[in-house]
Length: 254
Ligand code: HEM
Ligand code: MG
Image 1 (cartoon, rainbow, N blue to C red):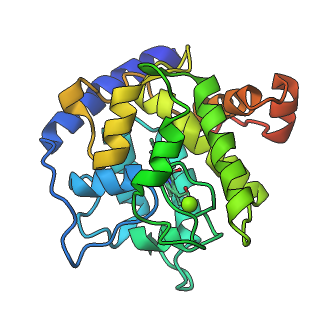
Image 2: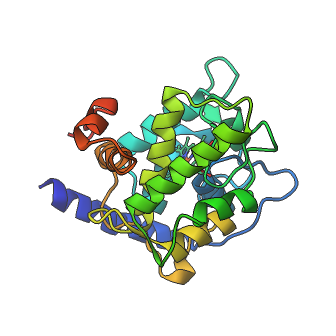
Image 3: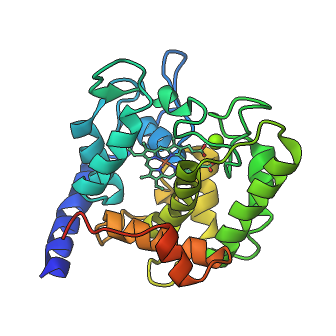
């Protein structure tokens, strides 16, 4: 039953993505972007406001469901985190650059961004990303390669950045960001993603439709993201039982 609902929803969602017509324009001088390559991408396509400003819960839910088939519960959950980066009291919207406030959600040892200590942690950094991709040999990124790159970036930062921090929240987010890659770009059962799609996405902040990418057919809920995150933690060296203890999963969509 749940599966058939997901399939019906995803058919509708694919149509919505087609309706976006996927125009793409880089940010202009008055537009803001932040440290999340996917939210930047969606703004570049106009699926989120192209300015990067005034992103409400409703806008977030529509954008994430139409572009990457996230359930509204997962989008709502992420939106609540995003709101914590808006310094205004009782804010109902966030702006993409606010996500870059260091040590709220933005953390050190990102896959494609510098640590704040050295440089901006918002913009794509080709040297940092070159280190990450050096752990992705071959055409396919599996969970082992993804986890190894995640760990290597942390070790580099520990070694070089005297102000290195990695809170519990950062640890959860950092592994969750890696887990989003197979869910959005690849095969959720195998935990793999085609490297060309992932690299193109990071480098261009553009959905890689020209390389054959499509909106995932099955909806992605918080349980899918949480369980994939447990698999990344598992691939990082913890047993699956330890990963489940570190990050227990609750199904918001049940
Ligand atoms: C990174 C927020 C949705 C993929 C980040 C970061 C933030 C963030 C604050 C920076 C963390 C860092 O310092 O590296 C959000 C919010 C979302 C959202 C609030 C939804 C409302 C998504 C989605 C994807 C995604 C749908 C799907 C692929 C990533 C990836 C990174 C990231 C791969 C890591 C970038 C790196 O390490 O260089 N996100 N994100 N995010 N996000 Fe998002
Ligand atoms: Mg960062």
